[in-house]
Length: 365
Image (cartoon, rainbow, N blue to C red; front, side):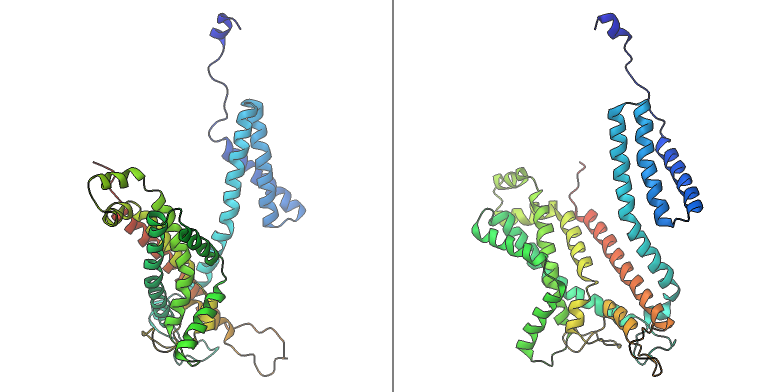
């Protein structure tokens, strides 16, 4: 190619307008809806056809105008957004369904009363205060057990036991614990407390021990990864100033990674706060208030939801084996309790973000 040809070569090529993806998506939706109305498709089929049309039309238009490489990039980008939408659909669906069915029952009376002396299957007033109290107390004591244990284990694995045989064994055991079913943790706690206190033991602390077994691996793995992200130069600079290792960990390593550590802890709490199987094995549902985790059964939100659905007995004249739906009052309380549980998890995550921002190291001068 001569210099004159190079001088005449364009430095830019045609590109699709910025609104092109939205325009193609809109056209695909319209075409899919029209075909669905003519052929009797349901909403799910319409959505799938619209997505396929979008994935085919946008790269084709890009190939005609922008070239093969740009068309490939458009296709991959559209595919990623489509997969993101597919993942969001069940999440948004569940949240919307819980809000739709639980919000009408979520009143001040519902949040400030317990279920003591509420008749079964009757639309009498009843609340979830006892279950909120039990959930928060049991989860709090589980966190008191799991957070120090998990954080100290992560510090040992990163700062002291790197490459050692003991560290490899601990890492293997943590990975195994990550995948154990929750009911196994409940059975372990049951066997432990029966062995110590006898078969008649009933206390909320049993649930805390079981949940701590499920929390600890998550805390260990998340904290370990955050500690590994701390640059080695920070540690070496602290050592060069004569700071001992334990003080370097407390004043340099942990504060640098505190944002990620807090986020991992909140993920661990969110992981166990809705667990039902261990609590069903360990605790008898208590419809009244009990603020002592070391004495007597306690109510929790997961067991409250289960109890509200399965408590009503079938009427005497219904044939044996007939599926009997719980009364509307129980169903309303069930959905409202699920909404309360979602709100608690959301509040915990917001608190984690605030705490992470407050204690995170300042990057400005």
